[in-house]
Length: 350
Image 1 (tube, rainbow, N blue to C red):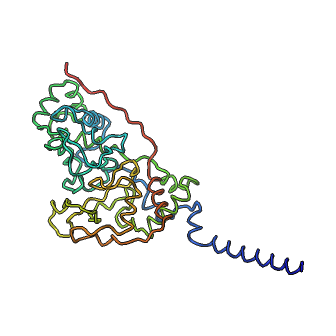
Image 2: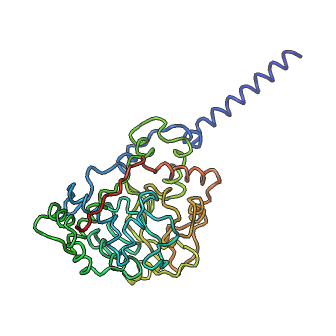
Image 3: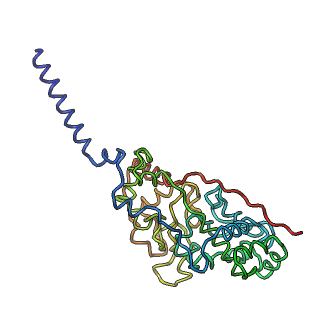
């Protein structure tokens, strides 16, 4: 009797050991371990050596400082109440925390405020990509009736009447004076300096053990694999700089189509960066989703048919509850280290 019991115990132990070995070798178990990145991951997602910038507006400390002061100055608006930083608040991921922007006269606008983080790496500006450079983008919100509603000629006169500004423009752009061009160039220089700081994901790419937890590592595998997020969100900035209709329900905004009237672009909007994405809720061009899990659920169901030209990459994913949770955990691992941003002292009239 004792021998039989010993045999059964040994058999049970052998089966358990085999099951453990199978689990240990399974992809899900391996993914849960602190695996290091592949060489391809390091190459694809590492930070570029330089910040992209045009030859005729190279970044200098004087230009960045002037741009920063202009960015935080509400006198750039017709009401003297709204600054660029009103909507692009550094405390809110350089966005505003609203579903859609609120402009001049408290008018609620139709699109959300995109973050200015990593705009230096974007090939197109605005949700519909109507500006190809930051210099061309910078003046748009200032002039727009629904946003800052400031006539540029009047603004130039106002800035020239402030000695401190005249000095700053001369140091930043010697001999060019205060003009539409130098205002745009200065603001653009500051915006290019707003770059994502190192995140847990970046440290993990460098091989730092424990930089990302197991859930985030699994989430990265889902991001690259089953969820196929990399079809649009790839590279250091996690964006393909393209335009896609992702099937947002009840979307009447034609997006990129209003700039380029090609059928495939109806309802298509620029792919945003995912850097610091957990800080910039609500999400989508119309602020439709309040949480990253809501965004993941949208993609998991393959979006909703919209304007008859849903992007071909929008397909049902069949993600499990755990996979969705891991994917959100990975997106949180893209939050950069806290960065201290000081509000500048504005020049005053004498």
